[in-house]
Image 1 (cartoon, rainbow, N blue to C red):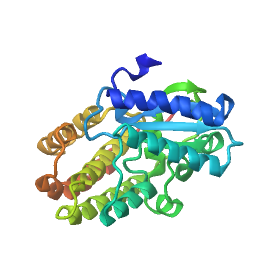
Image 2 (image 1 turned 135 degrees about the horizontal axis):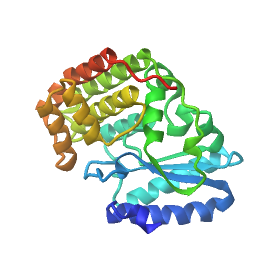
Image 3 (image 1 turned 135 degrees about the vertical axis):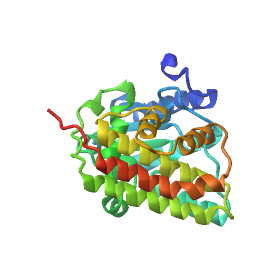
Length: 278
């Protein structure tokens, strides 16, 4: 198992090792159906500003109370290993509540086997059902995640998920969601050092979701960014996005440029013809 964690920072490796022990100790091996990594934890793109993505799939007999307890225990481990900051300020607590309801900057996701197999987006990612229905481009986000996921333990369930078909309307929802996030982030610059993180998240998911829509497969952010450079998206802007992931700080110029770039990414995507499944 260590070989699966080699490219990750020591704190993340220790966290995952303890998380495995905690899950098996608290629930028993039979209740832990599968453990997976996805996102920037794979492909050598984990950076100082990255949140690693750990998906825990439990048996259908596990109760809601047990699931909430698992989430609490995993969050405690993240704080212990310096992977999550505790929020004490009023603004910090408000932003944390928003992050929880949207799944942003979450390092662990816990669901039941049946939730994953039926592609139940709110239950898989613990997002608000209403927000997910109104704004989340669920088919392309879920498809992008499952096309680049690594099984660490248990069943290869991600290969059995029937992902709903994405349509042009899905891309419009992606545009609305990421544009709103970007505009909201602009308001935060005078008050929070995390403002740029929200801008980067909006840009990242605009690129990753749009790329999956066009190619029906996931790629690293660097590879997907190269594709959009060829479609005419600012090379300077995309380079800056990748630089900020490794040397994070608030950059108001990047923030001001992000809404227009998000609009361009989605407009270019809608003009392309996605492949049809045979």
